[in-house]
Length: 259
Image 1 (cartoon, one colour):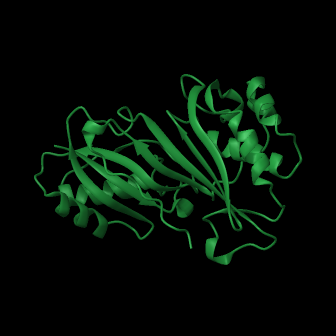
Image 2 (image 1 turned 135 degrees about the vertical axis):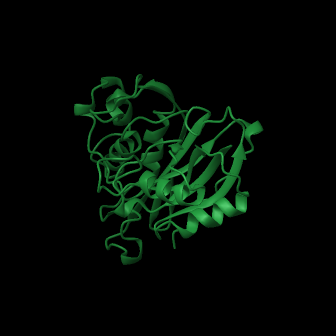
């Protein structure tokens, strides 16, 4: 059987999603250990999108295969009881053999949260990027619209990015303010390594009036990461949701209130 999981985690104490050398704590390692205990055999998980150290997830999707017969409820309860407090599985669903958490996805969504007031919030430590500089979210939103569409995002990806092509389609990129919280919302067919954090860094510089609105497009056209500005901190980044073809019937993700 092939089983899909909806995964949520606080990435603050993880060294990202992907398995690394022995002794390094990752989300994939924690999940594989928990699932393997329920399955009574070693299990390898595949996810919709790898996340870096410090990055959180609300709607990560992963899948694994097992010949062991368990109900969805048994999988769900058994996996969660074997997981640490900072990672949980929200749903479990049997899926068709042609489903793949990564390759079946048609889009992915992220959010980037910025706490924008003179003083930091102790309640949101590690969950948001805090800046005491006043940000103009309307300028940020205007600059963001220049990036929507299909482009070569070489200037917005990490130098070590291993993606075969830097060309991605950004479906939307919106910047909203809710009191002291600024939220950047993005949806694309796929994302490059550090793409969201690099976009956030450029938009924050524009929001501080350090750069003109047109700078986001100027950076894009340079196709050179070394000229692309600061990479924003991982704390405020959330892997929000993955979209799949309807016939897979994958549950929707609801983003919870942070406070």
